[in-house]
Amino acid sequence: MAIRVAAVVVAAGRGTRTGMPYPKQYRALNGAPLVRDSLRLFASHPEIDLVQPVIHLDDIARFKAASEGLAIAEPVSGGTTRQGSVRAGLEALETHAPAIVLVHDAARPFVSDALVSRAIAAANEHGAAVPGLPVTDTVKLVDAQGLVTATLDRAHLRTVQTPQAFAYPALLDAHRRAAAAGREDFSDDAALAEWAGLKVAVFEGEKGNVKMTTADDFTRAEGELAASLSDIRTGIGYDIHAFEDGGDHVWLGGIKIPHTRKLSGHSDADVVLHALTDAILGALADGDIGMHFPPTDEQWRGASSDKFLAFAIDRVQQRGGMVSHLDVAVVAEAPKINPRRDEMRARIAEIAGLTIDRVGVKATTNEKLGAIGAGQGIAAYATATVRLPWVAP
Image (cartoon, rainbow, N blue to C red; front, side):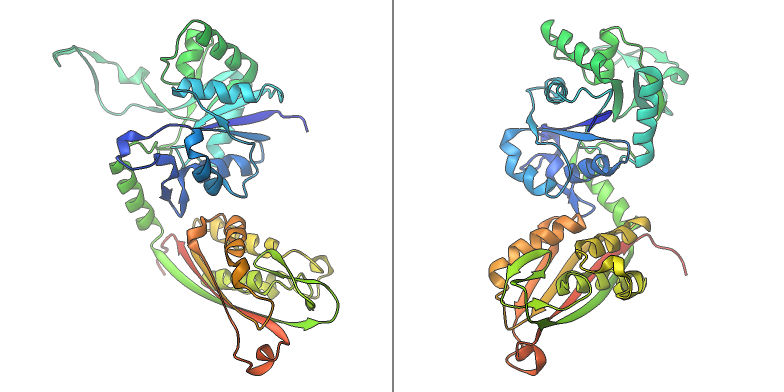
C-alpha cells in the first residue's frame, strides 16, 4: 500500500521533571498510558497511513504492554536528544517515502482528530506547518539579572504545539543537514525547519492539546477528567450457550480454547465477550446485544464476537466517555479456564483499548448443579464500569 501520510510519535524521553520512577509517557491517565492514547489517535485516524513510534530501548517492555493491539510500526530506538529521536523516526520511514509526515510528542495525549486533519491540510498547502495559539499574557524580555529589557508585541506571538506537519523529503533533508552541521539544539522541528530555510506556517491549535510535563500537570488533568466524566455507571451482563456435538474448540474471551465440543450459537458463541458487551450497553442504557446484532440477521452468522465488544466500546466513546473497568466470571465444568485466564484478560484489554490491570477474569464450576453443572454449556456474568460526561436530567 502506498504511504501518503505518516506520523512519528516521539516517546523516548525520560520525563525527569515529573519526579516519577519511570518515564511520564507510561503513566496512566484516562484509563491508559499517555503513549497509548497518543498512538491510538493516530493509528485510528482515517488520513494516517502509518504510525512510527520512537522509544528508549530501556522501555521496550512497558511500550509493548502499553501499545498492545494497536496497528503501528515496530518502534525504533531514539537518540540522546528529542531532535535525534525525531531523526531516527524519519530515517525509519525512508523505505515508505511518505509525502507528508506529522511529528507528535507522546506526552500530548489530548490531541483531537480534527487537529490532525488540520495539520495534514496545512502541510499540503504550505509544506511546513505547526499548530499554534495566540499569547494572551504580556510577555517581557529580561536580562541575566532579571531586569526587563523589552515588552514584546503579543499580537505577533504564538505558542506552538504538536503534531507539526511537513513535506517528508524536506524535513528529512533538514534533519540530516542539521546532524552533519553538529546542530542538536533545536527545541522543535519548526525551529530546525526555519534554520534549514523552510517557510513555516501556523494553523489553529487547541487549548486542550496540553503537554504533560510536571507532576502538577497530571494532578490538574486527573481532576479535569474526573470532573468531566463524573457520571459513573455500572452495567451487568449475562450470557449462556449450550454445547453441541462437533468441533474441537470453544471461543472464550476472544481466545480459542481446545475442547471436545463446541458451543452452539449464531455467532462464535463467545459467552464472555457477549456478557461484557451487554454489561457495557447496560451501563449506557442502550439496549442489548440482541437488539444491535439480531440472531435473525445472516451477516452475523459465525461472526467473531470481538466486533460486538468493540461496538459497545465505540458507543461509550461516541458519548465522550470511557470504560474504566471490566470484570467477568465464567461458570463451566470444562474446559479449564484458569490456565488461560491472563490470555483472556490480555485479549479483552486489547479489544477494549484498556490496560490489562483494568480487566478481571474469574472462573468457577457450578458444583455439578443444574445444566451447567451437568456439563451442558457455559455461562458468563459480567460487570462494566463506565464514566460519562455529566448531563443534567
